[in-house]
Length: 234
Ligand SMILES: Nc1ncnc2c1ncn2[C@@H]1O[C@H](COP(=O)(O)OP(=O)(O)OP(=O)(O)O)[C@@H](O)[C@H]1O
Image: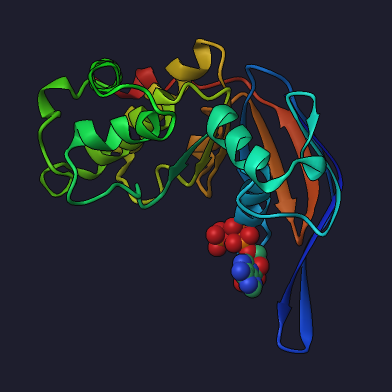
């Protein structure tokens, strides 16, 4: 599903340049649930942004679902991103003046799904994350965990093959984090490929594989016995 070879990325800082990714090689098969760990500044978000086609590498190859990304035009890249990739962020990134339902329906609007159909579909996804009753509420009326579940429903509504989550539990307490991981595991059980950037060991062990970044290179890549988050939620 995802294949990257010898990926490099630097940021220009005035006359200096900061070499952040220094030759990353990584493959994720369909249906994997991978944690990306590493200390602050090790390049996790940079890597995830490149995988999410939100940023471009300086060199190296990236193939997503068999398609080399480098050769895509900007329009094709945007279409490809909308079709294949879903995003979840630490800070939820919901639109504050739109209801939970409208937030979830947004990617369907961009996919030009007719209004009635997108509302029905958005409601189905809200139901899947246990928030059907909260459809008309604004994000400010939801708890952190509920906001993240809306954000996950929004990401899933576009039916991406790959879900990229950048510290999805970073702003949540442990119990709420485990509820969010329970949802991520259930989505993965259905076959989605998911990459989760996290600082937290317990969250990483709820994935099936842990990749460790240090100073822009992968220093460890291991399969782990998955801890089910449902063991920790009521
Ligand atoms: N747009 C940018 N311009 C310049 N430098 C950047 C930019 N984005 C990231 N960096 C720098 O690149 C390095 C890697 O950043 P990145 O956000 O990928 O690390 P991270 O492992 O995700 O860290 P954290 O866990 O703190 O989020 C850091 O030193 C950061 O300051």
